[in-house]
Image (tube, rainbow, N blue to C red; front, side, top):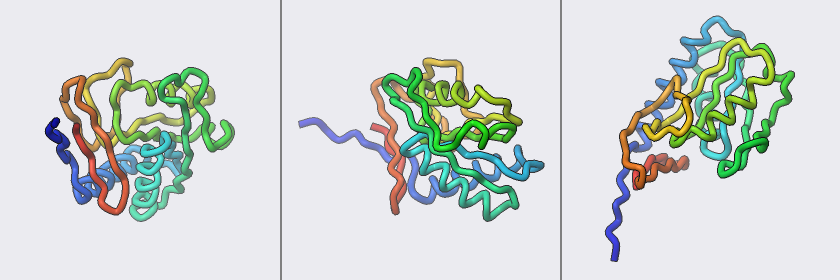
Amino acid sequence: MQADTTNIILTHEQIQHKIRRIAYQIYESNVNEKEIVIAGIAENGYIFAQRLKKILENISSIKVILCQVTMDKKSPHNTVKTSLKEIDYQNKSIVLTDDVLNSGTALIYGVKHFLNVPLIRFKTAVLVNRNHKKYPIKADFKGISLSTSLHEHVSVEFDKEDRAFLK
Protein backbone atom coordinates (compact mmCIF):
# COMPACT_ATOMS: atom_id res chain seq x y z
CA MET A 1 0.00 0.00 0.00
CA GLN A 2 1.37 3.39 -1.01
CA ALA A 3 1.22 6.21 1.48
CA ASP A 4 -0.78 9.30 0.55
CA THR A 5 1.76 12.05 -0.05
CA THR A 6 -0.71 14.81 -0.79
CA ASN A 7 0.11 18.10 0.92
CA ILE A 8 -2.12 21.17 0.98
CA ILE A 9 0.08 24.08 -0.08
CA LEU A 10 -2.65 26.76 -0.05
CA THR A 11 -5.81 26.83 2.03
CA HIS A 12 -9.07 28.53 1.05
CA GLU A 13 -8.14 31.68 2.99
CA GLN A 14 -4.65 31.78 1.49
CA ILE A 15 -6.04 31.41 -2.03
CA GLN A 16 -8.53 34.23 -1.43
CA HIS A 17 -5.73 36.45 -0.11
CA LYS A 18 -3.48 35.69 -3.10
CA ILE A 19 -6.25 36.35 -5.63
CA ARG A 20 -7.03 39.67 -3.93
CA ARG A 21 -3.34 40.67 -3.97
CA ILE A 22 -3.04 39.75 -7.66
CA ALA A 23 -6.18 41.78 -8.43
CA TYR A 24 -4.57 44.84 -6.79
CA GLN A 25 -1.38 44.28 -8.80
CA ILE A 26 -3.40 44.06 -12.03
CA TYR A 27 -5.23 47.25 -11.09
CA GLU A 28 -1.96 49.06 -10.33
CA SER A 29 -0.50 48.09 -13.71
CA ASN A 30 -3.69 49.15 -15.52
CA VAL A 31 -4.72 52.16 -13.42
CA ASN A 32 -5.14 54.39 -16.49
CA GLU A 33 -7.23 51.90 -18.47
CA LYS A 34 -11.00 52.17 -18.80
CA GLU A 35 -11.35 48.47 -19.55
CA ILE A 36 -9.22 45.34 -19.56
CA VAL A 37 -9.66 41.78 -20.74
CA ILE A 38 -8.99 38.92 -18.37
CA ALA A 39 -8.58 35.77 -20.43
CA GLY A 40 -8.69 32.55 -18.45
CA ILE A 41 -7.43 29.25 -19.75
CA ALA A 42 -10.20 26.66 -19.30
CA GLU A 43 -11.04 25.23 -16.80
CA ASN A 44 -9.31 26.50 -13.65
CA GLY A 45 -7.65 29.47 -15.31
CA TYR A 46 -11.11 30.73 -16.25
CA ILE A 47 -12.41 30.27 -12.69
CA PHE A 48 -9.36 32.23 -11.52
CA ALA A 49 -10.22 34.95 -14.09
CA GLN A 50 -13.83 35.12 -12.84
CA ARG A 51 -12.64 35.64 -9.27
CA LEU A 52 -10.16 38.32 -10.32
CA LYS A 53 -12.93 40.11 -12.26
CA LYS A 54 -15.19 40.18 -9.20
CA ILE A 55 -12.49 41.73 -7.01
CA LEU A 56 -11.32 44.20 -9.68
CA GLU A 57 -14.87 45.46 -10.09
CA ASN A 58 -15.07 46.00 -6.32
CA ILE A 59 -11.76 47.88 -6.01
CA SER A 60 -11.74 49.92 -9.23
CA SER A 61 -13.85 51.55 -11.91
CA ILE A 62 -12.19 49.50 -14.66
CA LYS A 63 -14.62 47.55 -16.84
CA VAL A 64 -13.46 43.93 -16.88
CA ILE A 65 -14.25 41.80 -19.92
CA LEU A 66 -13.97 38.06 -19.37
CA CYS A 67 -12.65 35.78 -22.08
CA GLN A 68 -12.46 32.00 -21.95
CA VAL A 69 -9.47 30.42 -23.68
CA THR A 70 -9.78 26.77 -24.72
CA MET A 71 -7.12 24.53 -26.15
CA ASP A 72 -5.96 20.95 -26.35
CA LYS A 73 -3.24 21.19 -23.69
CA LYS A 74 -1.54 18.01 -24.91
CA SER A 75 -1.34 19.32 -28.47
CA PRO A 76 -1.97 23.09 -28.34
CA HIS A 77 -0.61 23.98 -31.78
CA ASN A 78 -3.51 25.52 -33.76
CA THR A 79 -6.12 24.47 -31.17
CA VAL A 80 -6.40 27.74 -29.20
CA LYS A 81 -9.86 29.33 -29.32
CA THR A 82 -11.30 32.26 -27.39
CA SER A 83 -14.83 33.27 -26.46
CA LEU A 84 -14.10 36.77 -27.85
CA LYS A 85 -13.46 37.82 -31.42
CA GLU A 86 -10.15 39.54 -32.19
CA ILE A 87 -11.91 42.90 -32.60
CA ASP A 88 -13.19 42.58 -29.00
CA TYR A 89 -9.67 42.61 -27.50
CA GLN A 90 -7.82 44.67 -30.09
CA ASN A 91 -6.00 47.68 -28.58
CA LYS A 92 -6.84 46.59 -25.05
CA SER A 93 -4.83 45.50 -22.05
CA ILE A 94 -5.01 41.71 -21.55
CA VAL A 95 -4.18 39.52 -18.58
CA LEU A 96 -3.95 35.82 -19.44
CA THR A 97 -4.62 33.61 -16.40
CA ASP A 98 -4.08 29.98 -15.47
CA ASP A 99 -4.13 28.16 -12.15
CA VAL A 100 -0.68 26.51 -12.34
CA LEU A 101 2.32 27.38 -14.51
CA ASN A 102 4.02 24.01 -15.04
CA SER A 103 5.94 23.70 -18.31
CA GLY A 104 4.58 26.95 -19.74
CA THR A 105 2.98 25.23 -22.75
CA ALA A 106 -0.57 26.52 -22.14
CA LEU A 107 0.59 30.08 -21.40
CA ILE A 108 2.98 30.33 -24.36
CA TYR A 109 0.35 29.14 -26.84
CA GLY A 110 -2.23 31.40 -25.20
CA VAL A 111 0.11 34.37 -25.55
CA LYS A 112 0.82 33.45 -29.18
CA HIS A 113 -2.89 33.46 -29.99
CA PHE A 114 -3.46 37.00 -28.66
CA LEU A 115 -0.46 38.47 -30.46
CA ASN A 116 -2.32 38.41 -33.81
CA VAL A 117 -3.73 41.87 -33.06
CA PRO A 118 -2.25 45.07 -31.59
CA LEU A 119 -2.56 45.27 -27.81
CA ILE A 120 -1.93 48.02 -25.26
CA ARG A 121 -0.36 45.64 -22.74
CA PHE A 122 -0.11 41.91 -22.18
CA LYS A 123 0.50 40.29 -18.78
CA THR A 124 0.16 36.82 -17.32
CA ALA A 125 -1.14 35.72 -13.92
CA VAL A 126 -1.02 32.34 -12.20
CA LEU A 127 -1.98 31.16 -8.76
CA VAL A 128 0.95 28.68 -8.52
CA ASN A 129 4.22 29.16 -10.38
CA ARG A 130 6.48 26.10 -10.68
CA ASN A 131 10.08 26.25 -11.76
CA HIS A 132 10.13 23.59 -14.51
CA LYS A 133 9.43 25.63 -17.58
CA LYS A 134 9.90 24.18 -21.04
CA TYR A 135 9.30 27.56 -22.71
CA PRO A 136 10.66 31.05 -21.97
CA ILE A 137 7.52 32.37 -20.34
CA LYS A 138 7.05 33.98 -16.96
CA ALA A 139 4.14 34.90 -14.78
CA ASP A 140 3.91 38.65 -14.24
CA PHE A 141 1.58 38.12 -11.29
CA LYS A 142 1.80 35.00 -9.15
CA GLY A 143 0.28 33.81 -5.92
CA ILE A 144 3.08 31.46 -4.87
CA SER A 145 6.30 30.13 -6.44
CA LEU A 146 7.37 26.57 -5.75
CA SER A 147 10.56 24.68 -6.41
CA THR A 148 9.27 21.16 -6.82
CA SER A 149 10.68 17.98 -8.29
CA LEU A 150 9.60 16.88 -11.75
CA HIS A 151 7.65 13.89 -10.41
CA GLU A 152 5.51 16.04 -8.12
CA HIS A 153 2.18 17.36 -9.32
CA VAL A 154 0.37 20.55 -8.29
CA SER A 155 -3.39 20.77 -8.60
CA VAL A 156 -5.84 23.48 -7.63
CA GLU A 157 -9.42 22.72 -6.60
CA PHE A 158 -11.75 25.68 -6.87
CA ASP A 159 -14.89 25.02 -4.88
CA LYS A 160 -16.42 26.24 -1.64
CA GLU A 161 -13.22 25.13 0.12
CA ASP A 162 -10.55 26.17 -2.40
CA ARG A 163 -7.28 24.29 -2.01
CA ALA A 164 -4.01 23.85 -3.85
CA PHE A 165 -2.34 20.44 -3.51
CA LEU A 166 1.16 19.13 -4.06
CA LYS A 167 1.29 15.40 -4.81
